[in-house]
Each structure stands twice: as structure tokens, then as C-alpha cells.
Length: 135
Image (tube, rainbow, N blue to C red; front, side, top):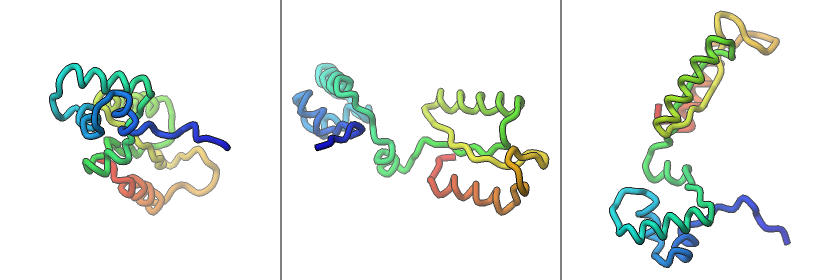
């Protein structure tokens, strides 16, 4: 029988290892409430030992925030490469992630064929909006 190697560690499992309740794990991991240093330490150590990664999809559904910012830019060249690195770094520093979509730039596009139309660019904007980006 094959087992899933990418299975998420649950908060229930962290609670079992830390010897606390699942709601306590949730409170510690959310960082919204103060709990004793001992409890907080046990939960964080258990999460670390289990290699816990938060499910950002669930968190986004609970909070209404994706922490993803849409960036619509032309295909890369040296100028836009620097701009996009700056955007990435600023978003990363704010614990956000960029979601990139491409547009045309002054009539140039790397792929052969017709240039993107306004309809293409509108579809790209809709791709971002459909993913409920925060900005």
C-alpha cells in the first residue's frame, strides 16, 4: 500500500504531540491570543518537529484574506526584471506573495503570433480577481 508523502500535518496531530487541545494549537499558531509561555513553547516545538505547514487556502477562507497581490506586467527585459524583483522583495517583506500575469509591452511579445489584445489583458485581470487576490 502506498502512503501519501505530501500529507499535511493536522493541528489535531500537533495537539496530541504537545499534550494540549486542538483549539489551543489553533490559538498558538494564529498568534492572536496570549497563552502561557510553556504551552506556546510546547505547541511550537511539536509543530516544528512534525514539519507543520499552515494551510493558507483554509486560512484565506476563514479570514477573507489571501495575502496574494496580483502583478500584471509585460514579459521580462532588464528594466522589468529589476521592477519585478523590487515588487517581489517588498511583498515578501510584508508576508505577501505576488501572482504574476503577463501583458504586452510596446507592441512586443516574446511568443510568436498575434499580440495580446485588450480582451487578453482583461482575461488576465479576471484570472487575478477570480483567485480573490488582496490587491
